[in-house]
Image 1: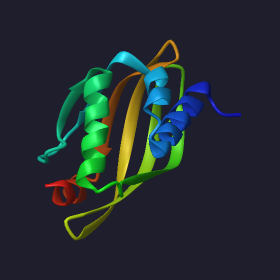
Image 2 (image 1 turned 90 degrees about the horizontal axis):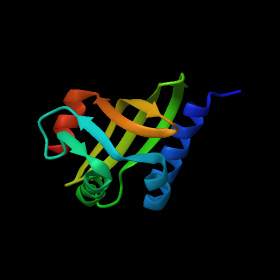
Image 3 (image 1 turned 180 degrees about the vertical axis):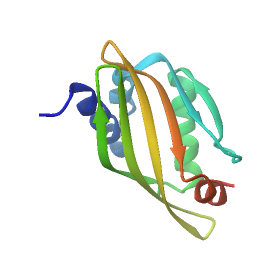
Image 4 (image 1 turned 45 degrees about the vertical axis):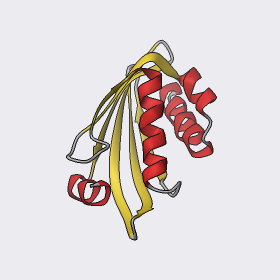
Length: 128
């Protein structure tokens, strides 16, 4: 049996893959924060659902809708979850395939914080 927070994160990835922002709006806290390191147009901290959804839109626009992520493993406890992912996309004639880790803070059944830790050189090279 999986932990409920692992199921919550899997539901998040499934909703993202479908482009279902309504479902994500139910999973994310209104004041969610999403942080991503690096030196690209995507780097930064996004606060609130509007900014996080804008970030998702930018990812899809920059990749021409080709961005995909596949979860290899999700580990969770009562306050946190970690997703181990493989990311793929195409952009400006380049193809990307890199690994990433998402760390989620969960409070009262909602995702309140997300920190992404991509394979930094591959991420920066592709998105710059």
